[in-house]
Amino acid sequence: MKVLFIYPDFLATRLGRGSDQFEITKGGWYSEGLASISAVLKGEGHQTSLMHLIEPVSKSDFRSTIAKEKPDITAFTVRTSAFPYVEQYLKWVKEFDPSLLTVLGGVHATIAPWDCIEAEGADIVCVGEGEGPMVDLCEALAKKRKFDRIPNFLVREGRRVVANPPRKLIYPLDSLPLPDFELFDFSQFVASQTKTAVVIVSRGCPYSCGYCCNHKIREVYPDPEHYTRFRSPKNTMLYLKKLLKFYPWVSYVRFIDNILGIEKGWLAQFTKLYQREVSLPFACDHRADLATPEFLELLKDAGCNFIYFGVESGDEDLRKNVLSRFMTDREIKGAFRECRQLGIKTLAFNIVGLPFETPAKVLKTVKLNAQINPNRMVPNIFTPYPYTKMYEISLKEGFIPGPIADYRDEVFLDQPQFSKKEVLFFAYFFQLLVRLYQRVMRYPKFGRTLDRIVLSPLLPRTFLTTLMKFWLKFVGESKVVVRKRLPSFYILLRDRVFSRI
Image (cartoon, rainbow, N blue to C red; front, side):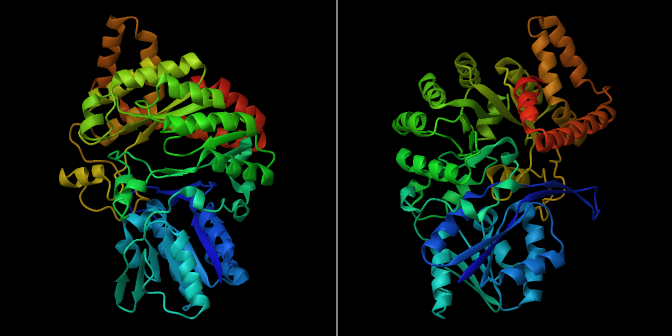
């Protein structure tokens, strides 16, 4: 059997209410899930190929790729924001060949399977991990057997849907083959422009942050105690060495695991092996409340020179009761201080426009960032994604009018104490405000004056936001051009200039 994976890997934002025009942010990102499923299928003697869509594709190009590949199954990986495009592509598949089987998998298929199976042209929805179900499906088709009883699958049969129970999680992860890196064209990846390899050696997360769907995915499985899993340190080295064999030009590794090294014993063994067998500088994600000096020293010894932390809010009450992130200001400050002392650069993720947030509470986030002094800051505007805890809060409190049908539309919470124009102002001016507060921290009188200016209703927020939006767009587009054409110069700017502004 031959499986054609279809991977919509881009972000579309509607240009104005009711408009049929979209601003497209091109993709170019590795998918560990597809690489893993492909490796398993190939190990069972099946064929795979990939339609990696880093921007929307025309109907003629889409159909020509299917005609060229001649698959038995088209398998879509679905993100919530890309679902409208998947709905369109499903129709194109069925127009091309009504008998060609379609399967939907990925995060959105797992948390919203009934929405997916109702899409016109959807035959099967895979809930949860796809390796076992896809092998079972290919074997059933090869032997001309029915496939409506395969665990993890919702299968459409005419007007009815057969819903099968999920199977257990794949445990341990070492039981999986190494990913099929050959499935992808690494030259398409954004990370490849800076000779960086994107790597993930774990699955799941033990935490249940309010904006994240991990808790919902965990509930799918009959054995949630195994939800958070890591490849063993030895298997991780095999993974990395296979990747570097195919792509020897890689000079930097970006681990995108939710948290790299939750368990001290794993991290200590990883550090020793990584130093000896890979020895490339790397970046990773971590949590401030777990980033003890001991953990950070192990990461530093392994070669870590950049850590991404989720700060999210400077208001402890919001962090605890809305975000479900039970960490204190003291723990956050301590983690950033330790990183600075060890020479590890930091990035702080922040969120603006949270449920129950006010301008004064956003200022707490600004001031906390001024105190922790990260090398880089990312201020995201809150989006209530389906089936997360904060989505349910937003619905219950009336901050959104109802279920969100299309995430290509900008979504802002309707909160009288924190208007859309205020949210946009703080998001666009976040980094500048942090740097301003860093300069006045030693002078409380000037700090209070700055507070009054920033919070003043007389401040022309809309005008200022419009100007800053154009400036940030110019800077962003310039970075893309420099990264593509002068990657070495881009790295220099990123590490020496943009990390401080």
